Image (cartoon, rainbow, N blue to C red; front, top):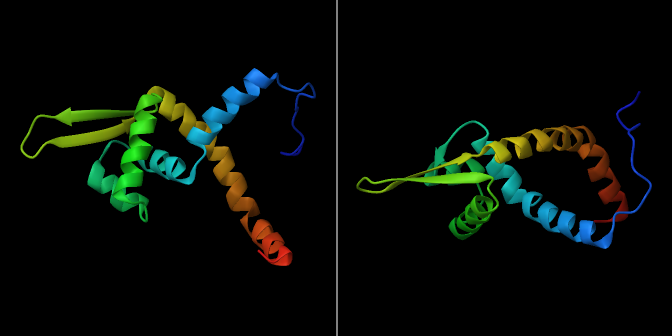
Length: 125
């Protein structure tokens, strides 16, 4: 069986399910979330180290991304009472499952990147 031969349900999702899926996918599918989750998959990191590893992310965007991921239960934030204060971020069990779900998508993107880039060139974008 080829990797494209997968069972896809034919029945449409009810509108309520679509909205819930859209909200979750918008939250976990943006480029900064994917990159932050990828870096935290290797273990807990301090804020500045995470910002260096993600590269290109502004301080504001990293802060917003981490706050959203913490609210969603994907990342934990641990504050150590020291001078200066130390804050570590790491994936929760739920965050680890997100990482596992992103791996096949990452593999698909790597496999199909050149074809997509060629299609964009042909389309003039």
